[in-house]
Image (cartoon, rainbow, N blue to C red; front, side, top):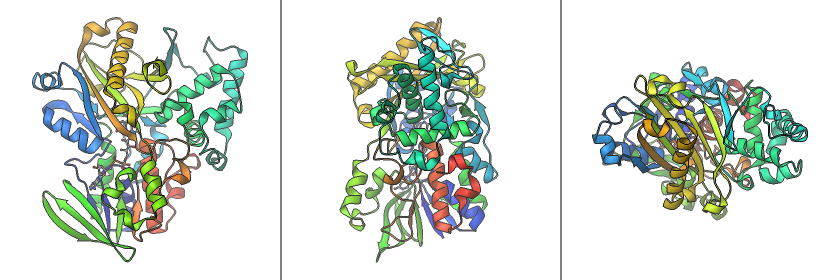
Length: 500
Ligand SMILES: Cc1cc2nc3c(=O)[nH]c(=O)nc-3n(C[C@H](O)[C@H](O)[C@H](O)COP(=O)(O)OP(=O)(O)OC[C@H]3O[C@@H](n4cnc5c(N)ncnc54)[C@H](O)[C@@H]3O)c2cc1C
């Protein structure tokens, strides 16, 4: 029997594989009242403000920063009836061919996906749509022949690189890696903006070259373009379907999911897991089991796995991990005003405003990709900027980000201001709990099989895995299932470009 703590993505991925393929008895203990973790989606039909806030905080590490009208009026005034949106923005990398859908298809539960069918950049107040070849400078009028050649050269190097070589760049910054290869400022800009889209980190000094290369080569080798068409969204109710589908597999194979079950301590005797102490609906209980898969963020692991079981260097290393966060805005418009899917603005704020680097904005016509997200004839728009976890707790920077995103849309899209019915801005400090930064990726992440406690495994986007977000959490789940069972699920489930 195994116990999986947390009904997000990583733990339930491992649990589903082990229940379906190994016949293991799996119990999922989730502290929130909802399945989903940070993959949370809201159908706003009968949601009240108190439940929204609580769920947003407990499952998705997010909070409301601003709204228009004020939150109380937004919920009691019926503005959100018929709308459906995520806890923060959510798009899936590599569409149907990423790790998430590949694994769910393996488990017999593929996703319904809505790919992005347009992409572009706003530069100097003009929208430049991406066409085939944009990774080589394609149709970007600001690039001369040399810039196109250099941009293409870097792209080819990333895509052709084998995974082992990519990992050898894990602990150097993208800035250093790039500057060793080209001085061309347009090539730098192009690849730095793409890297921000991949990692939700603005500064190339803070992005791991290796992890970013792995992401670009995975998209290209899967047959998509990393600046275009490499993303999709999900049908309603949205991304929560991913953890829900894993939990379904667990339950269909004799397992169980218990909500409002807060694991207080992983119990360890003589270096071995013996079970967990858990508070279920207010009652304390001890559940005995020989295997525990920790699916919570490793940053928080010492809240329930006593640090006395670990060497000091390991505890210090985990405590030093920094997080990548986000400031996201949803706008409900009375009619469609924006036609683009994935669209990026290289800079809406910067060092001069108190950020650490140029701040990029991403936005898309969410209901154009998945029409159920808005009532008939209306439009849901998603927008976001990346923030470090620390910046996300700075109200001045959050306010500024919200204002700049709003101002950008008002200035560049006729009819935007007049047609906004409502807006809600949420912030999270934990989009990527262990940011994809040099010294935090690859072998720096805690291993799936805990080397210090027998029977304990870790499976979350913050433990052993590569790349980011859902695809990272799925990777972690498959790695954990492999370590628990001794069967090589990595090779069995994933194609070469997604394995490492
Ligand atoms: C605002 C935001 C936007 C995002 N956008 C994207 C995106 O566009 N694309 C993408 O692919 N990914 C995105 N992500 C990331 C994605 O949601 C995560 O990568 C994914 O959910 C990670 O899964 P996980 O299992 O590692 O962790 P989680 O989803 O956090 O799940 C962990 C679960 O464990 C539970 N838990 C923790 N401690 C305990 C305990 N002691 N007892 C019981 N239960 C416990 C938590 O409540 C939670 O449900 C976004 C995340 C956020 C916050």
